[in-house]
Image (cartoon, rainbow, N blue to C red; front, side):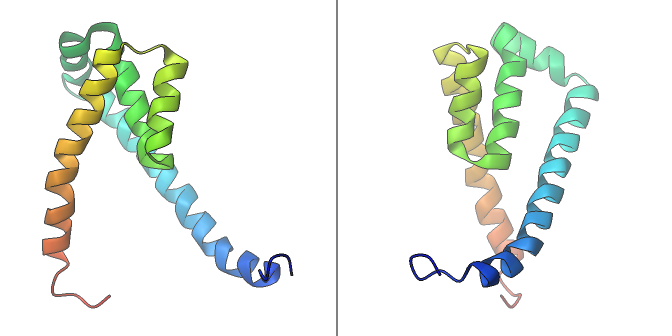
Length: 112
């Protein structure tokens, strides 16, 4: 065991988590693709942010899969404008302020 970690035990517990992560990642990519394909989403993004609209959508998808640092890594890789980066993170935070209390309220009577 390295640094007191039981590698065999970690492998057993990480297997199901890895499957869950892969399923959630695939679902995020599919949902993002559908959202951009249906309705006026692309034109709304283009009207609001110009060429950076789809870049913000891609960065937010990456954030939802791998965390906040992914947002900034994708933004940098795609050469997003600083205003578009700020707008995307702002919208994400506003929706988080709605999503997390709502999901907490919906689950409040359920056991952990």
